[in-house]
Amino acid sequence: MIFRALTFNMQNGQPWDSNAPDHQEIDLEQTVAFLRKQDADVVFLQEVEEGFDGGLQIQPPPNYAFLRDRLADFDSVFAYPEVNDTEIPFGLGLAIFSRSKLCDYEKRDLPPGGGEFEYGGIVRRPSSRLLIAATTVIHGRKIRLLNTHLQAFFMIGSTSIDQPAQRLEVERLLRSQTGPTILAGDFNCAPGEGLVKQFAEVGFQTAQNQLPTWRRMPFALDHLFFNHPLQLGSHRVISTSASDHHAVSAEFSFL
Image 1 (cartoon, helix red, strand yellow):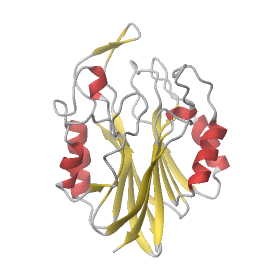
Image 2 (cartoon, rainbow, N blue to C red):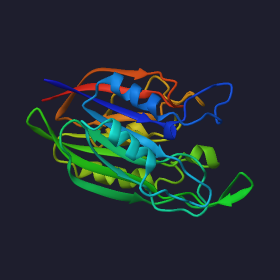
Image 3 (tube, helix red, strand yellow):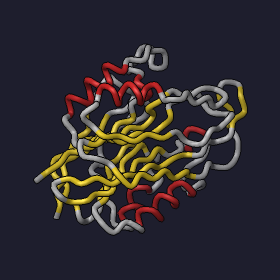
């Protein structure tokens, strides 16, 4: 028996328009319609909420509340990263939605990179990143679900090779997994940074690494990694105007 997983950086509900890529009104109904159409059993979301200069994090998180209301047949968890008072006003926050009940929730903060960079006329520090995890039961089998969103060091004059702490923390967590596990997310690693090879060496393959998943640069940033107790079936990159990212969908079965 198969089940379907989907990972999607939803850009806080901001649709994509190539003529004005950073100036669209939030449209969470479009996000929900897209997610419903995919008919996934497990959905991993990144950039759920809007980020603000100064690090404001609205409580309760409004976009997550909207999604939770519209996807009421799913169980879900959500978390913001640690506050950064020099935050870039981009999307932030992670969620997992599952048709089966979630338990054993965990939130793990990932260390920020070093150094400073300028954006919008403000000198900023890299933010802490985040990984959230939960367990569910699908077709009678327990499966651990991990969701993360790493720093795009290539956008601030560095690389995750030079600043590997976040990747190494995720790798340590992968090494500790003893049962079926999916690691999803936006890993923000440019070609040549070696992320896919690094995780393969600890037993986690990606569903796909050939097609780009980001409209702004031709990079495969978004992945569904899985370990040996799972077998990969059909998989695809799904183009959508609901975000500047494409979604990645894959079908899995248990070995």
